[in-house]
Image (cartoon, rainbow, N blue to C red; front, side, top):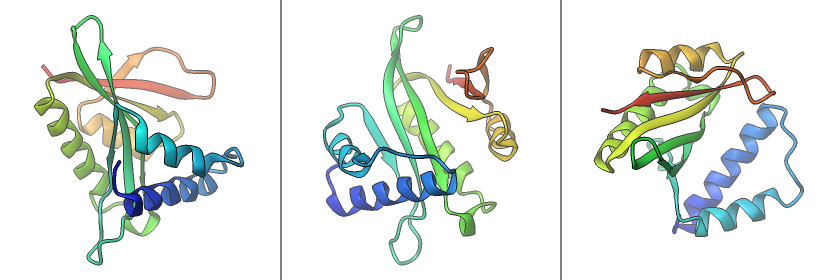
Length: 150
């Protein structure tokens, strides 16, 4: 992510989301995330903007490899929309755009994790064709879901 202003905005949104989610982040979290967003070779960030050009959400993704397909895949690692914008189709639009990007990039699948308790997100993901990719959890109550693109 080359733009330092957008990068700072994204880091701020992640910090806001962590507070809202009651997640404790390391003391050097912001500095480390800034550096990773600048240098990580597989990162893809999407940030919807309001009429004044201010971001009010984000999707933070990474390209990886799916060995069984012999192609790339795109993992939606985090997706967040500020409260006033929720319920307006923003997440839906971001996921559609990410699917288009994945298809254009010859990805075999789009993957994401979803908290078992997040029924709104689960409903959205199911509506968009995602399903349980692996039975079980990571121990913290998260499911891994996927959407095959072929």
